[in-house]
Length: 176
Image 1 (tube, rainbow, N blue to C red):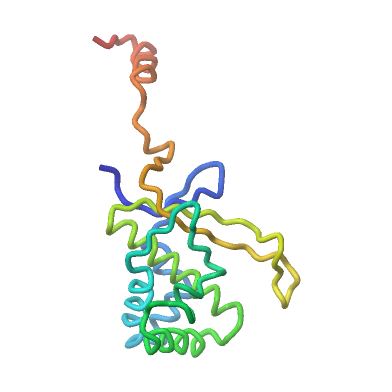
Image 2 (image 1 turned 180 degrees about the vertical axis):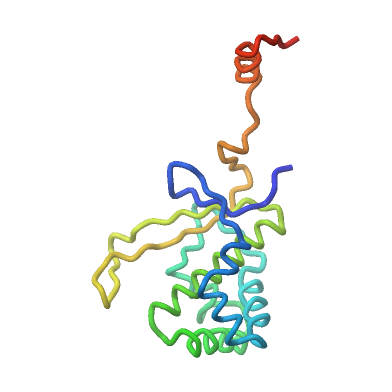
């Protein structure tokens, strides 16, 4: 059985997203330091929003459109969502820094869920050609998440017998 992980497939070489590394990024450290009592509740809120979510490639969870996950359309109790967003805005204000913090929080929880559940979540980052940042006018980068338990990154695939044979022949060994 392969381990569960979140894999960023945006680049030529797949990259595992390490939940321990994300969990210590500047946004999450600041939240944990300034809101120590609320932080565990915020984790629980995001985890419960992710719940039994099973996005596929055709129905990916797109971070910039997460109203159904952490907004008005969410199945999470309203008081938990209000608590979550109030803590985000108290620490980061109500600008794009807050949205980046929520994006980090979401990525961390997805990576952790993947690792703990044995699921393979994929992440694809791309530039949204239609939307622009209202402050800078720059194009917005969006993150899409979905589960594909049949996906194997190249570095995790077992070598074929022919490649093992080629390697063995280079060392003067033979396969029987």
